[in-house]
Length: 111
Image (cartoon, rainbow, N blue to C red; front, side, top):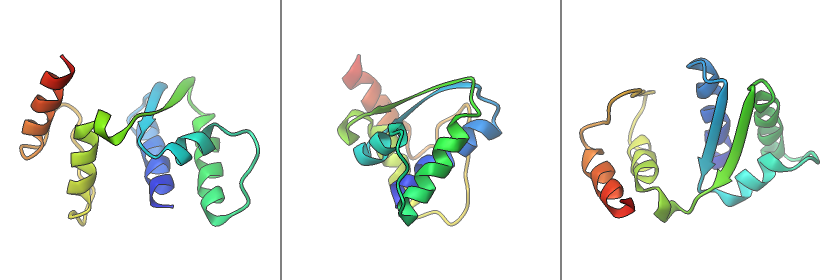
């Protein structure tokens, strides 16, 4: 449920900042799979998924893909950081100082 709520919030955030064509990546394979399903899910979790799917239809274009947690250290570090945070924090063109080393390490591993 938490992963589904996080995915829905990411979709809402993309709309709030005006993105019209977006690619969503997530490490919760079940959530990504369910967001791509055509048939509705009739559970409380499913209601969150169905709401997220309705929001996705408002984009000009979107794609969903699963990535392993080990494939995105920065997202994992941000998620851990968020668990200790009581308010919303948004960085659009900068990196939180305590995440910079993770970003640099991730960059050098990929390149």
